[in-house]
Length: 218
Image (cartoon, rainbow, N blue to C red):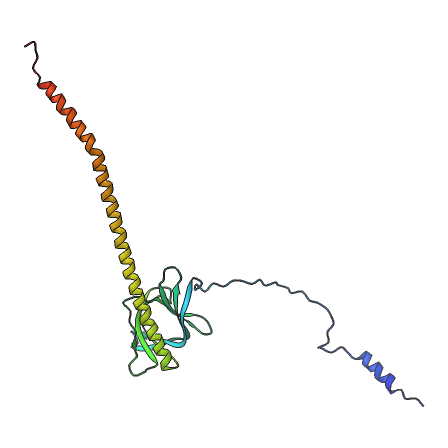
């Protein structure tokens, strides 16, 4: 007597529902088509000359204590045309700006007392959308990174001082050139007016002589 088990098994396979992972071959078009959008960071015209991970603090004068601004990456960015350098730091996850200010010739950075991995400096910061005088403290994971930051800070400040001196010298030279041109134009104008003035004086002298000549009838 032949067994009916294979036929029964085949019938069960046909009646079994399709699995959830089975590929039906159907294609579903997306409801919304997303287009790639270019995001501007404001750093496109600048070159990064230093990039270090750190944690930033600002001194709260009212509370007389240090408050954390965020942990992330601090950068020195040099503008490709003007040569100006600014310090920018963003939080690692949100990319929110913690610090944003120019490095000026008068600035200086010092090691934070009692901690070789930290340093402090004063700056007029624009991170919150308005200029504020801030006292910053930044802490690095190693002493080497802190030294690298401080050395670059001082180097940038010195270079900006040289740029200011060069600009002053260029402005002074331009002023002298302008003055020389104006003096030359004045001299040329005086030379042009001299023959005319001499001729007018000669004509006036002749007229005076005619008036002084006695009348023959008298």
